[in-house]
Image (cartoon, rainbow, N blue to C red; front, side):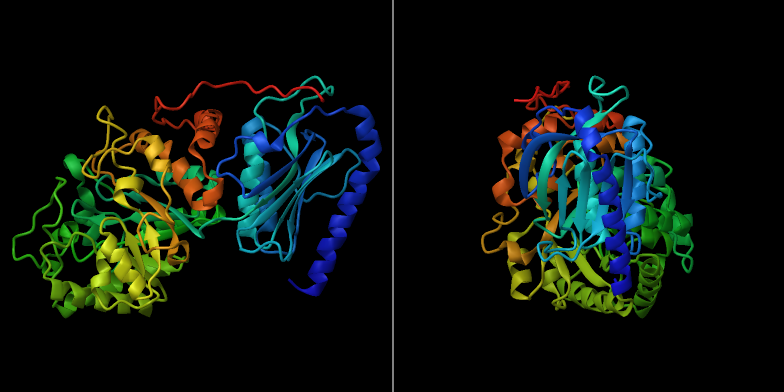
Length: 538
């Protein structure tokens, strides 16, 4: 930000505060706000530090939103917040409009260069009777801050303090920042295809809980789900199958760009995955020269793994992959490209190593950092490559020895496709059952001996789709467990406590119901919807 921009932004802030101050005496005489306790609110993820001041900010028709206007992304976040407030309580708040005598309270989203904001996602939230101020260095941090504010807005108005509806937000201060900079979910659209609107809904839910990555598993034995213009049969042939014999489907490049755009508005990075050299039957059915297992390739709609492989010795295979990686990378502004690399059981080890080394060069050629499932550490990978731990702890240790960061996705703890228990309607159980408490009660920082917090890029919860084909089924497996993974990624270990979390989780019901999420009603959570009443002034 230039000096002139800073001056204009500060001048606007002073003007707004002065305008509110002129109203302050009148407002205080009119309204005696009741006692509240910000520290007891059901926020997820739990913020780093909360100090309650035990009064309330009255959100009503006399409230306006203002933002830093000459800083990238801040006005857009103001409009996003206004839209979400309207969707929740049918209250329309003006954004960055000229000062009005009718405005008595403000929400100000402020770009700040405070040294206390240690990461790009750090934010400070100050709530008084007359103003809500969100400070952050970046739009990304401001966006995380407004998710906290959204959770603090009650669904029920207080109709006794004024002659109009007013929603009371507890006053106090919140200082917050993420434990890990990478907090992700993975969605498998290859085994069963999910439409653009399904992915958008999932993005909305992830954003509300401050997750910042959606990893899309775009290809597998059962289907190829992304249009590649230079190789049209990938979708014309490979996109027409899925597990169980359904019709499949695929994203056109315009579909994919729309997903990327929608995610970007929510400050979520899309990571595309093309799984290889195994899990490649759909690609090889589309173009048989790719096949390297020595068998005639046919469409596959089962759930067996490990039988397919690319031919790792053909130059034409790498020319094909160059086109695929180039086209997807051109549509993907995020820094990562995921190459899969898991369960290549019929690929000889030396051929696997040769393949991964070659594909890494292609990924780098198009300006991306490579991610792969933890088997990729067998190859001579660059130190910038990231290993995603899912199965073998020794691979994680090898990654550290090679200087690679790790994404923690242990199947026994973080796989959303595992059943909750033996009675679950959907899911698998090869890694065991993962009930809601088990999904939450583990520490990514201590899960593998020798792997410390500094070695971990972040946490990701994968959802494989062998047993699910609708959004309702997806939601059953993902929720409520994904909410716990969001807290594991954001909140510090000292702020994570199961007994406290399960109470906050139970109180997410109003939001989940408003979003029509068909979550699994785990019997270990008291899901009863309770109408919160705020006690009178002490």
